[in-house]
Amino acid sequence: MDDSAFENALHELRTDRVQGASELARRCLDLLAASAQAVAASESSELFDELVRRCDRLIAARPSMAPIHNLLTAWKSSLTQLDGSSLPELRAAAAGRAREGIKRSKKAMVKVMENGAGYIGSGKTILTHSFSATVLGVFARLKDRNIRVIVTESRPLNEGYMLARQLSDWSIPTQLITDAQLGLFATQADLVLLGADSLLPDGSLVNKAGSYLLALAAHDKGIPLCVCCESFKRRRAGLGKLHLEEMEGAELGTPVLPGVKVRNIYFDVTPARLIDRWIDEAGVHKTGILSERAQGVSGR
Image (cartoon, rainbow, N blue to C red; front, top):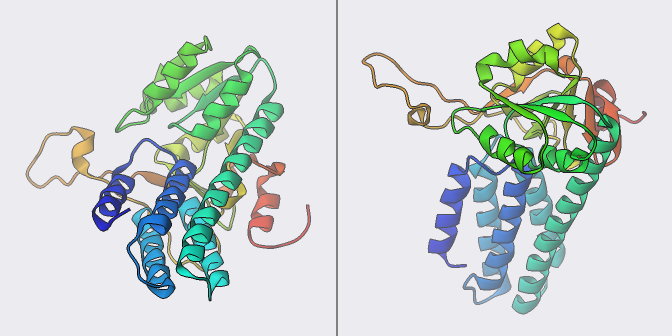
């Protein structure tokens, strides 16, 4: 992958509004595998430096998404074990370790889906917001278990439409609502199910803007909130202030008015106190317990 192709891929990563954090993390690893095999270099140290540079730029492109940081940082750390390798050996090993990271990510995601479906069971009405590949996988496993789903539009790009279309294809009874109707429809649900872009060390959730408002509505109505999240989405303590990405205001389709600044922050933070269960590849956890595990505190 030459510099031009990498720059184009980096731009696509920054502007992607459809794929979830795990999918984008795997895309980053795929880019690094391709870079390892194709970057022009005359010696190992030159290739190593370029791979590290590209890795750091990919991490910086989506700062709200912990899996990109975690999976790519782990890959970068593994390169140090390859010190002394010949150029062909470094190319093969760096690409191979990136692909192994992709396999681990996919395996964890499948297990989360299975755990989520097992916990939810049959005959439930589920309210969800935004588009999560993990949540979609849970629904795929529940489609023959008499479930019903309430889906928000998920403005500004309405990714909820994609989810509703897939649920329709599976003949799952679905209601599609505006984000503003969350409070009205929360009482119809047995539970709220969300994906995650990141899990903060205190057990809070970083997800598509609107998740916090949904959590407040669910809490007020006594509806449990469950989050499906692979463990590598946990943001480590000490990484500094969380940056919530803000996109172009033009995405909202609002008029241009003198003195009016349009804001389009894509993510919000839902406090751990509003989350009833975290579901990861290891099982189903109460929020407080998962918070302790995310900070390295032992015990269940």
